[in-house]
Image (cartoon, rainbow, N blue to C red; front, side, top):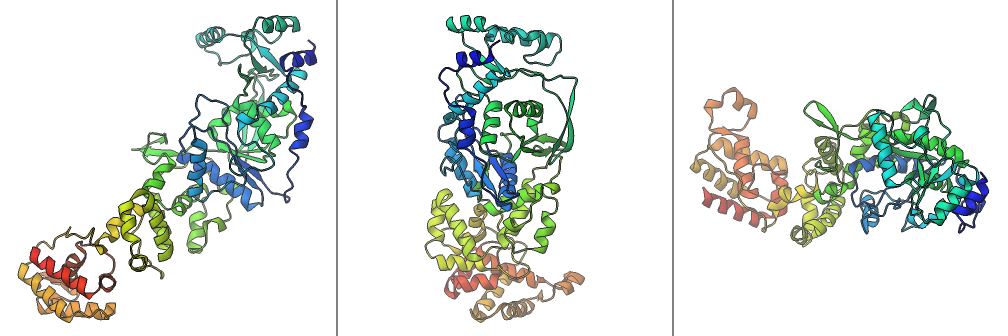
Amino acid sequence: MDHNALAELLFPDVSKTTDYYENLYPKRDLPEGAKVTRFAPSPTGFVHFGGLYPVLVSERLAHQSGGVFYLRIEDTDSKREVEGAEYDLIKVFENFGINFDESIVREGKYGPYRQSKRREIYRTYAKELVKQGKAYPCFCTEEDMRQLREKQEELKLTPGYYGEFVKCRDLTLEQVKNKLNAGLPYVLRFRSDGNPDNKIKFTDLVKGTIEVTENHIDHVLLKSDGMPTYHLAHAVDDHLMRTTHVIRGEEWLSSLPYHIQLFSALGFKLPKYLHISQLMKKEGEVKKKLSKRDKGAGMSYYISEGYPAESVIEYVMTLLNSNFEDWRRANPTEDTNSFPFSVKKMSPSGSLFDLVKLGDVSKNVVSRMTADDVYNKLSKWAEEFDKEFYDVITRNPDYTKAILQIGRGGSKPRKDLETWKDAKDYMGFFFPEYFEFIDKTEGFNKQDITACLNDFADCYDIDDEQDVWFSKVKEIGEKHGFCPNIKEYKANPDSWKGNVGDVSSFIRVAVTGKLNSPDLCAVMKILGKDESMERINKFKETL
């Protein structure tokens, strides 16, 4: 077979050489040790939470080393494409503070960053493979392939185009010409020289040294429409975009032998691979893969629910690096990006997705924010997802910030907010639009409640600090038969109508409508004396 003649026959329109593209996309000018990583999704319109794993690892590896992190859209399969999905994807990741150095909206020198616009590049390298006798046209029909699969299933053999099942591998140049002249469609296949009896040792940066079976299947390189399969496209792109590290899910391990073989055939240096275990969820005692149908599987869920981006990133870091939580305890105020992320601290086994753990992490993250930060992030979320609440909290920013300042700062800040969605329930009572008497003070005499509230109203001074405020409450309680000391009350409860905590709850429900609220002394200072007294009077009417 004259392979050069075959290459010209199959690719008469391909005039550029592989050397042209090697020169067009030279080695990147980066510091020694800098890593080039990528995220390369298909634009299908759904951003999975599990996608945050490889993205975050890729971003950290690149940026902590002074390298480049880029986005490549793998849109060679038009049937799966959702219009505009790639822009939604970029927006989602931007929301979580992850920005790409190069992408379809931030073109660098190694674009285009859509595979559908790199068709000529793939065909050039495919032509070179044909020239070297490493690829050939296959004219097998869908019916041929169906029969092949049925035969392999019947014999319980590995599915694929190989060995005795190969029909087009050794066609003569004349036979290829005749089929082309007849207008028969074809795909371009890789000519594998692998042996399934051979094993290859490979070092994965997460899994360690693993052993895989050599690829012996003649996989498709170009589809019948001339577009590349993922395998050819990613190999060419990772090489020309000078990718040093590929971070992907462990489901790609089965393709690794083929990719090793393909990179070698193309004359490319194989990038370093990190295969990340799948994100799991627990159902009873059984662990299962997190699917698209599961609550919290899509990244848009966290945006609409109001999880702070910092919380989600911090939670993922606790799963990716086993020493992150120790680092956080030692560095409570440091930005997450300051954490020295290490591939060596990644677990080779699957991580367990836990919304409860995320909630705990989020409360801690929000508790460390300033009132200004909380106000800005909360109002931004509310503007998109709860416009009425947004109008209320932005009516008087200083008032809202004062509310958010309660219990903030110090060594033990309050941890009331898990998501921005929680804010309305937490602070809504400060605003007339949302104030209502939700809870009741059950189990106490109406006259005792009224007497305590009347005495409190008579002695209340808005300038009182918390200790003075509380001492007055204790005095009022004791006057009406409520023990001023909790420990003493627990020792002899039958001697009292209740304790000072009960008296505080009378005031709390009257002023906030709830049994649970931030520090009541601080709440009343913000509401003001007139509003606080008016609420107390209204509450007495409900008794």
